[in-house]
Image 1 (spheres, rainbow, N blue to C red):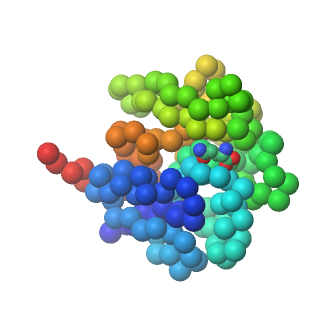
Image 2: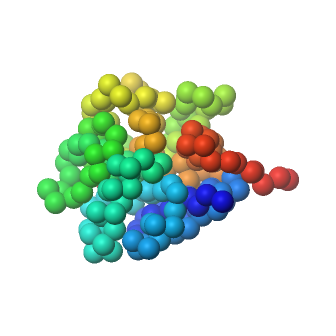
Length: 198
Ligand code: GLN
């Protein structure tokens, strides 16, 4: 059976794991290079991208994870996870890593101080009903490359996007009891879904 990893260095990983398990996925928390070898896909949660970047370094995972992503391992990055996957990070720390896995420029904390956290319903292509999106000091997409498919936008700014095996959301889909984006990620990458009944 395929195993879906959840990067568990820091941040909102537990709720992601619960969402994936609710879909019938076999999951594993990823903290070491050995954990990474054991997974077939990876969710990179929200949290603090600069801290996660540092922990990717100290855990020894950065080069392995970079190689796995470049080699086609499906990844779903939310909020800080999206920042780590983007090709360009504005207002980041000079030494923070990004994997350059999806052709987006994102601005850290790009929604500004006045509205640094907010909730709104968005329309996601492929989903019949709106998705309630929780934004917490979210990155704002500034530039979108030609290979990127925008799956949802808020006020004209992309908030869910995909490029091949790499999917990102600038909000926290794990904080609402709605696993449709996790489901979309798994289905797009050929994982079988066996939802809990009842
Ligand atoms: N602002 C955070 C960062 O720069 C991301 C916030 C989040 O993941 N909720 O990493």
